Image (cartoon, rainbow, N blue to C red; front, side):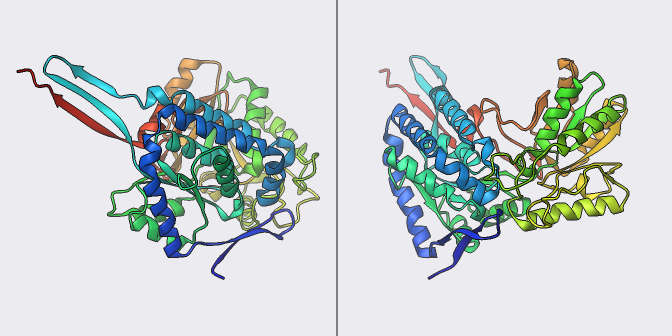
Length: 460
């Protein structure tokens, strides 16, 4: 038996699932099958591909009663929240709806002498490396449009959510998507690197850590394989003096704490105008004190364990360092906090950007709150980060939000909402959050290449 991947459940530390990785030879064979199947798949009518993908999405939805507790076992999200099918379906549906217009030929001009146009051509084989925190939604962001556009897809999921790719592949195959067109694989890091370096894929989409993204780019160096990355984040919220205070507290604190803070675009730092600061902090503390930490299989639990003890250890270290440096922790340790994966959610004040908790990605249930006196001060602090995924602005003035948003180094600007992915907008980032763009018409453009036609007519 070869190397085994093991999903350790954060509920109790037991091994919930394990799978053997493919050998290097078997992995290259899987990629070759995907390449051999791509031409026939792309030759099918667009509507047929779209219908098959949406049938696969529906088949995943039919599994939801099994998926929800399975996710709780694998990564700790409480069952009370019902899984990810709502967002999963919304994103796939939108990409299906815009496929025809997004992939349509671009007419450049035609007269009695020439016909000129640009087609969108699928890359070929798309490799999707999906994370564990929202394993279904992050995967479908690329899987659905890639398949609809005529690519074949090879999916590799994080070990923490080992069974997700299997379920997706089973569902899509049951709906009629050919097995070689959409494959789930279990791979070691070394074989993953070999596949990318060996030109097994035509496009790579990676969601994960900065280090993981760097490894993808290193593996692809010199191959001219496109690599799209969505990496770390340290997303800020800014509450202006005219904000709806209650809505800002409810949304930003939920954005910081939901899924135990393990959200790509979760709120990790909050800047509040001095006129609202004290009230904001008081309300935020009351919200978090009302959370119920516990077993995610219990319907009363509102915040479950972090996905892995080592993730919780990093958050605890950031909090401890901040408190030692003068930060104030407002939440007393919950009785359910076991020093392991079960972690007390925390609100910190008297924080500065000298502290790791305000600089490094926490990816856990902790948020620092700072007082500001002006837009300029808030903008400077929001931009004082190596990351740039989203920023959440709270004001009643749309023009002001747009002007402030223009000055923020980020991929998405929210006004009066946070922690949401609109499939009609491009999901993108800047700085160490990575480069790329998913969903929207731009997602289709990134999953295809332009091909130009310059046709001279015979007129004589």
